Length: 109
Image 1 (cartoon, rainbow, N blue to C red):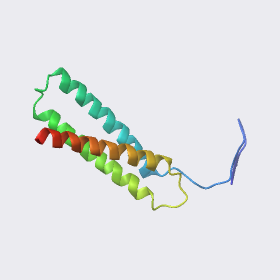
Image 2 (cartoon, rainbow, N blue to C red; image 1 turned 90 degrees about the vertical axis):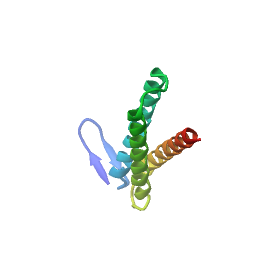
Image 3 (cartoon, rainbow, N blue to C red; image 1 turned 90 degrees about the horizontal axis):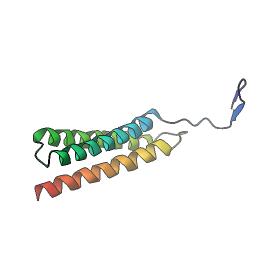
């Protein structure tokens, strides 16, 4: 239980915290989504002739999403944590993994 006096009073009846790997997973998911959107825009501006650099950056975005997903899943084993950031991180990174896999499969076909 925590009571803070000064400015405002706060009474906290739980010892739950946001896990650091969950927060990192959430941040990695947001950065991956933003990077993928930037790659989409830049690729469309170059009319699909952007070269191997954008493909490499797309694979890098995929790997960052996999790392974020693994970090989020590892948080579920911990006790006394808020599950918001790991849940959002795992869903966001999972959707990005599926999107990247679909792009690579469609590009190979």
